[in-house]
Length: 255
Image 1 (cartoon, rainbow, N blue to C red):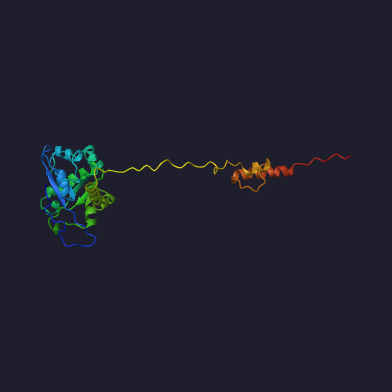
Image 2 (spheres, one colour; image 1 turned 90 degrees about the vertical axis):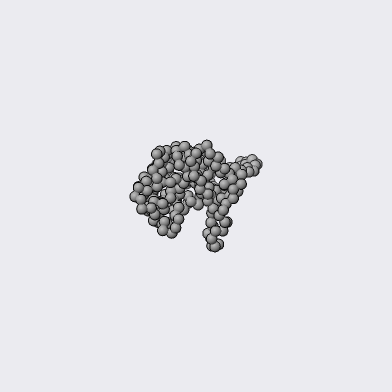
């Protein structure tokens, strides 16, 4: 069983900062046995770097990994397909864009390839499931968070999606990786809470009639609360009352 050569605490312990150990495996042959289960037990994060369309399809559909990190500084002989990448996003796998190699290198072709490949990747994923990181070897390759967000807009990634790529999506990768290590195939216990309580019919009140109609028919003496009348009904009731007051009263015959 392989062991991680990185110590659990590679740097002095700092409050509120947790260091994660990650293994990045380069995929060259789809038929090769990569022993991902043993690597997943030794590292906190497991990522793969496909080098061909077949290995990319394998990583998106079958491999149990956390991150698919593509080398976007080189030209790929294939196009990114939405159906293939969407299969990985549905499984909770994220795609990583590394900007440091193209920034440090003085080769203009690497920068052009990064912009072209990143734009194509963002278009194929609809901006979903993207994680932006540096892959920097030294401090010269690092950029501030807002500089990274602005760099994402050059690739066609909206500012809100760019912020998620360095914040929420990156955290989701670490959380999901930890859940997979600590759980067994996502087992969930369903407890039967019994049948829902039956409502008592005694508390149900019959529908009340309009207050004006009930009073006129002698069904209500005005002490029982009735639903309020609308303005239109109030006008009709006022007109009916006024018409009743104006009606002449017949004189009683004298004996």
